[in-house]
Length: 107
Image 1 (cartoon, rainbow, N blue to C red):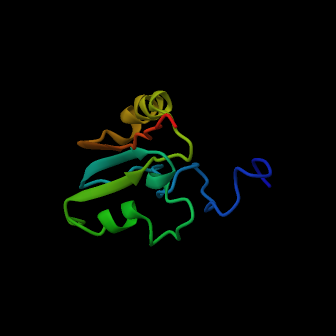
Image 2: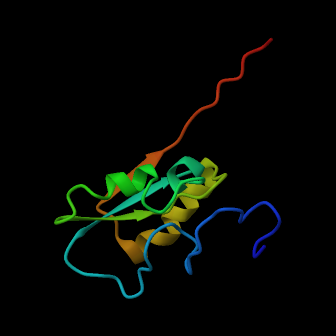
């Protein structure tokens, strides 16, 4: 119950709050890919090796390094703020944003 009754149930522990390795110190030699999104990107309910960013990060590992900065419940505004706050640390060459739009029907 580190962050409250509901917010940390089943989420992996991370010293930086994201589902990726620490970037201090930043490793050299590869292009950085930042992946942003909501709980689907973060991988709520999945193990560290089972969410879609983990599967994506198995490809092109000789040239690319993946940073999963997805956050459960993240809005578009929060995603832009996360990118703005991390771009001078990670220096991404590629930015992936994965969002979804819910469609409400009048019934």
